[in-house]
Length: 126
Image (cartoon, rainbow, N blue to C red; front, side, top):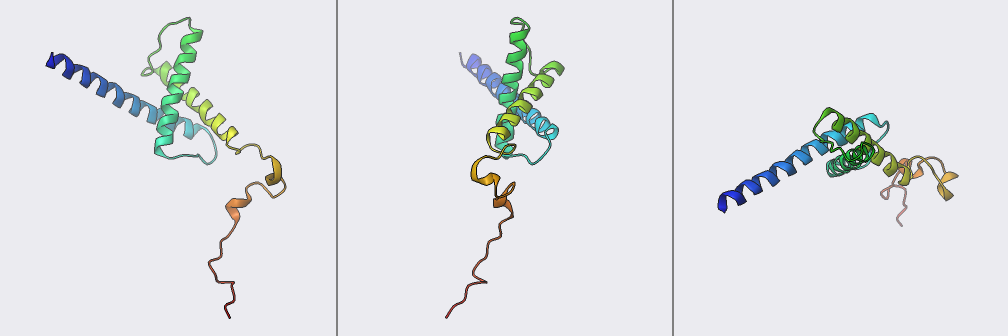
């Protein structure tokens, strides 16, 4: 019983590490393909890669009538990258990077990026 539990834990650890490594590679590839500044750090890249793998492989599985697609294959890598690219595109679209609405439209593209902060140098003390 102890040997079965140990092999099951090793299999789960192996699967998690494969998904983390593969998700990171897919997320980095999607960010390299999409031009412009990328939001998020390492954890966001990993989450986007794992989510893109799920989206891409499940979409391909749906259109191939239930034939299982392994994410760790050339076709799986391509569809996972496409899925992560799609997630990144919608993240930027919903985050306001492509379209500017409301009051910000009259102030320029990104007025809060170019604003300088003064730390009391212009204040006159009596």
